[in-house]
Every structure is written in C-alpha cells, then in structure tokens.
Amino acid sequence: MKKKILIISFFVVITVLSIIVFRSYVLYEKQKDLFKEMREDDFRERFVTVSDFVPGKDGDLITYDSDKAKVTLKVPSDWEIVGEDFGFVSLKTKDFVPLDNNWIKKPLASSGCWIEVNIGIERKVEDYQNLIAEYVKNEDYVNNDNDESEQVVDLGYAKALKTVIVSEVLEGETVIIQIPNGHITYGFDAYFFGKDKEKCKEDFDVFLDSLVIKDSNENT
Image 1 (cartoon, rainbow, N blue to C red):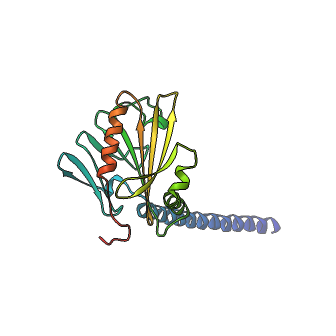
Image 2 (cartoon, rainbow, N blue to C red):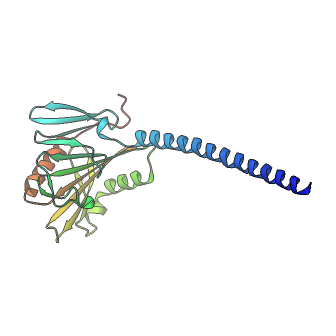
Image 3 (tube, helix red, strand yellow):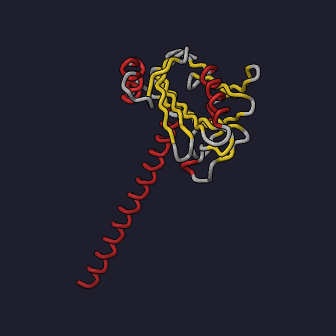
C-alpha cells in the first residue's frame, strides 16, 4: 500500500513539475516575443536605415531624402546607397574595392570611396548629444586644446565636431563629422585609403557642402 502511495506521489510530483516547466517555457516564449517586438520597434524608432531614404536627383547629384531623419544626402552619380553588414546606411562608389575582406576593415578602400552614415534619433536629448552640442558651442576651447585631431568646423549651415584618425600603417585617415540637431545626431565617417583617397576627399567635401538638414522640431 505504501509502495503504491509512493508511486502515485512520484507521478503527481513529476506531473506538477512538468506543468510548471511547461508554463514557464510558454511564459518565456511570450515574453521573448514581446521583448523582441519591443526591441524591433525601438530600433525602428531610434535608428535610420536604407529603407528610410527616398532616392531622387538634383542636377548631376543623386539625392537620398529622409523625412524621419530630417536630412537629404547628395552624392555624385557614381555613388550609391547600401545597407550592408558593416552599418545601417553606407554610401560608396560603385567601383569600390575593399582593402581586404576583413569585416573590421570593410570600408577601407583599395580603390573607390566609402562614407558611413550614422544617424541616431532619441525621444529626448540624451547625454552624448548634449556632449557633442557642448563641444560645438565651446569651439574656442576645443580648437585651442592643442589636439589637432579634434576641432569644431563651420559647415555654413551648421557647426560640427570633426575628428581625424590617421593610420600611418595603412597610409590613410578616417574623418568623422558629428552634427548635433536637437534630439537627432548625424555622424558621417569618411575613409580615405587606397589609390583614390584624394578624389574621395573631394567627393566628401561635395557631400558636406550639399547636405540639407532640417530643424529636428520641424513638422513634416
């Protein structure tokens, strides 16, 4: 009799544990899907991807306009916009050839040019955006800091923080332009490597000169 009770008790415990495990798994799957959906929604709201741009033309330049990011990008006709594994949005010449196939070095050119576009949109102005804005506001301090790799530059339509990273080994440099615009921050990383680096510098100047940025508080 006792043995029978023990066997029944054993199966009851197993059944209860199975129910608990099953319910926990179901709850986990539901929460996982919920958090995944929240992450995807948050990602779509905070970051700009290729799908947020509408292509067009302005004379000899190709344009990419984004109402979401309050910006219009313009590049020469031999450039294109891509969304590859290195970043959400990249601009590169159609003849771009990487220095090698290493993912980290992907935007470094053997020939051709590459500009990485990083646009962050927050619901409110975050600390890092305030930091960039403070750098830009205090340009005298930044420009007199004896750090030639970092300076505030006037683009005409906006002031930006410019950072230059030189690679003597690869005989090139990366120029990073960061432009604060309220709760939106624009980052443009240009890579000057390979045989076309001087032309890439010229194209980057055209890109910055023709950039159109709207007020981040402007309604569309």
